[in-house]
Image (cartoon, rainbow, N blue to C red; front, side, top):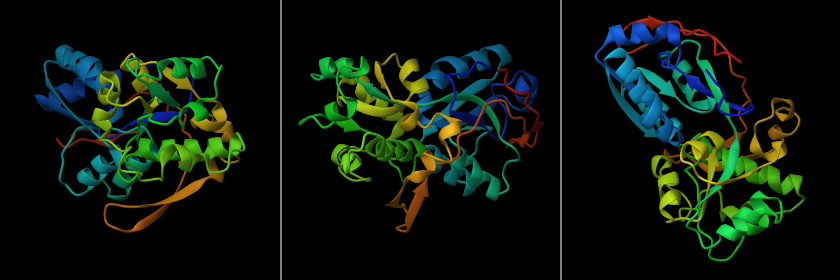
Amino acid sequence: MACLARRSFVVLAALTGLMFPACVQSVAQAADVLRVAYAGSMGAVMDQFIGPAFAKANGVEYQGIGQGSLGLARQLEGKLLQADVFLPITPGPINILKKAGLIGTAAPVASTQMVIAYSPKSKFVADFEAAAQGKKNWYEVLQTDGLRFGRTDPATDPQGQNIIFAMLLAQNFYKQPGLADKILGGYQNPQQIFAEPSLLSRLEAGQIDVASGYLSAATSHHLPFISLPDEINLSNPDMDAKWYKTVQFTITLPNGKESTLSTQRVLRRGAQGHQTARHGREFRPVPAKP
């Protein structure tokens, strides 16, 4: 499958391999309904393109469930949700299901990177465009009074964690102590946190000015964005151990316990694996083509 960006986080297919040709007929034969649980940032591409195309080609009904992928993984683990396909962006949610014995090897099928997406309807759009062109420092623009910044919950969604990692890396890279707190107002600032499926929709509607996001999601929503350097966007495998791993933070989880988080390993596309779906069929995806 074609890569969504140059490199970085890998979109992981677990439980089945929806996007791989070798398993298309197997999935179609297993049931009349294909249920796909995916990271909410993938809503546009899943519900408008991949899901309907799969349904039409194979004569099945497509049902998509988009939420924060950590929350989805915990629902699947607790048998509160059933799905044939699980598509998070990062490996953390996959590891939850591996430990629960629900999946085998996950298959990476695409990649993306962190960006700052902004609303064309924002009164700050001129500043965002200048930052996107390198004429203004993006981190200074994000500190503008009255600017409405949106992101997802770091306790339930990897993207919510990744924007915090990105801001911590930015304050080190630009030598700006306290930068992350100035922009985020705390790791779990409720004024900035929105459900992942609605975040970019709010941005499109102009309800917020700017939001954290993945390049793949911003592109699929046709939203303008500010690119971040490799030192910040969590996309470069060569920077994983020596740079990305230098930052960490602590948050409170939904169960009330505190958890100290470190960046997850940067993955490459093209791995193989096999998974067993809720219908008891085993599917063997083929490697994604580079």
